[in-house]
Length: 238
Image (cartoon, rainbow, N blue to C red; front, side):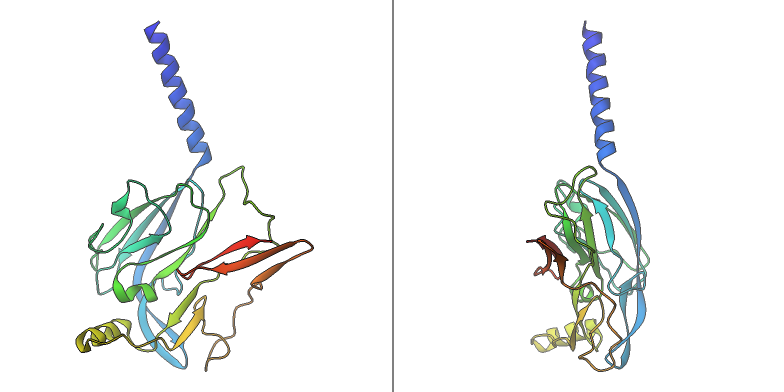
């Protein structure tokens, strides 16, 4: 009888494990921190980026998934990455606050983050957690509902991730170092950006990307993109 009960228990645990695997998935990303040149507001500067893009890559996953991000630091300073809005239960060593839960990833080194999604859904963001570097090292995390489920509102006609940021003409680290040396506030940004572009009201701006409007909908279904203090946008319906 004991062997039968043991066999039943093993079978039940195996079934539960297979069910969990069917509901979740793993995703793998490579982030290369590297210097890249960008021209904005009539001037060209070199700044730290992920994979040479600004903003950085968008991470796509579903609720309950696990994401592995291998970060290679080819920059000049130690940097960490924080997954803003992800709870990371019992996984603080992959949360990213520099010198609190993790030592900085040194130049020439790499570190693989394990990002465990639990009940998060919608649009979150990731960013460097090392002072000045977060201004250029950041991107979106788009978390869809688990397979077989949907958002609690009608699907919009289209989706567009919108990231608000700032653009500084000067070197960011120099701005911070000068402020610390003088005991003053850092210089403010020269412009705001939407998905990395200052927009047509600023000089020498590239034409804005052909994005869907912030307000979308037809009939009785209207979707509003609402910004968060973190700088990411998510959607709600009326």
